[in-house]
Length: 265
Image (cartoon, rainbow, N blue to C red; front, side, top):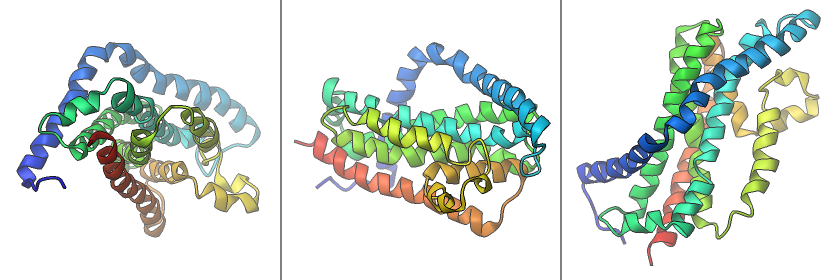
């Protein structure tokens, strides 16, 4: 059983765990800075302007928006999902199995829960910063129609955390990375393609629409569009938020168990 600590002590220890990831990133940020800044503009130009020109010429507007404006918020959500996935599978397995970084961390006053919270806090922080850049990019392309667009970085951070929390929990308990590519191919790629990211859910066959709505990314995409355009009903937005928050809570519960089991002899 972990010793009881005060909230102030817990905050201090979690912050130290977060600071480890932030300090490491200060040594490696140059390798990803250019892509972080350029990718939003490249995606919006190639898909929004290039494909959008063909879409608009043949079908006109998509749910009252140009194709560029329609897909712009969804690209923020898909990027957040990708960041949550890429930061949470191989890096976590490496830290608990190959490099033993997390074992070294719990040899200090940090607990497995502190390691978990620090990791998830860093993923959230990094995704929030990237989502700010995406929000600026899609605003420059004219794809924001409401002051609610200011919440887009928070939505991006929530989407990343919703995916990262259960993936960190899974990776912490994994013995090898053999299953990671399977998860990527058969979970993340279908979600990227079929979460109403590039075309509205109404374009799917009626029988498939409930299946699409089961994808967690669908809820992130819907939230991002609702914020960008200032649309969406309160009940629908509440459901989208509830799904993502539930994923975070399940991931935290699961991650506490797997981290403790893996790191405490």
